[in-house]
Image 1 (cartoon, rainbow, N blue to C red):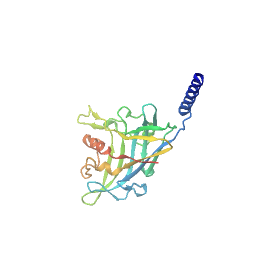
Image 2 (cartoon, rainbow, N blue to C red; image 1 turned 120 degrees about the vertical axis):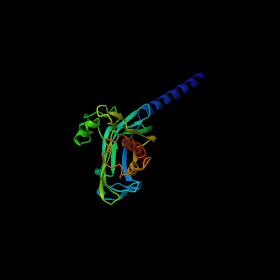
Image 3 (spheres, rainbow, N blue to C red; image 1 turned 60 degrees about the vertical axis):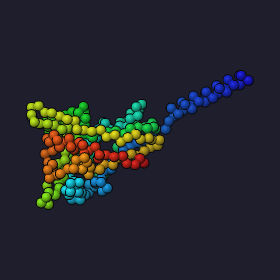
Image 4 (cartoon, rainbow, N blue to C red; image 1 turned 180 degrees about the vertical axis):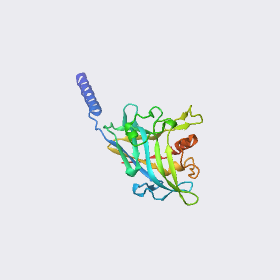
Length: 255
């Protein structure tokens, strides 16, 4: 009887080990992608409608968009054991379309992950002249402002109080204080976006909603009649742009 009992224990142990090995070795890999969808509150941002005065800011200015492109870096899924990187950096140009999809270049192990990315470049990565693809599309920041790269170039027109078309250049860069041109003072105004912890068991597409209207309203109501062009050398304006950007990106559906 004792021998039968020991044999039963051995069989159960063997099957348990076998199941554990199959679970850990023969897992089914899954693919994950990010889809950025751009809107102005509930209105889709359509490149075909660029240069048309259809959008109204929180402060009441009617605007048109001529160019909108921005940079995200260190786009990743993190779970403490396996970290997956979508891209070290990517330039999203909304003139190419309302939606932009970024695919994870490798298969993912099913589980729970934090989704994070940085708007712009951190100071560590914002090194002048080293990214040739960004150099070729004029995304550099002039040396007199400390060099490196833009975080965003958002250009268009707005209707001024006389209902006349006026230009705006809502450009985001690392904030620089040029009070003493020989001793520039910088503040890293990039920011990290944390979209929370997501769980994946099958191939998934993560929707990231990009609400462009937020650049003009939260927490700083933007007055284009006062802050329209020459924002890059404006230290305080760059800090306000960074603050407003933290509500631009939100998590949508996971398909």
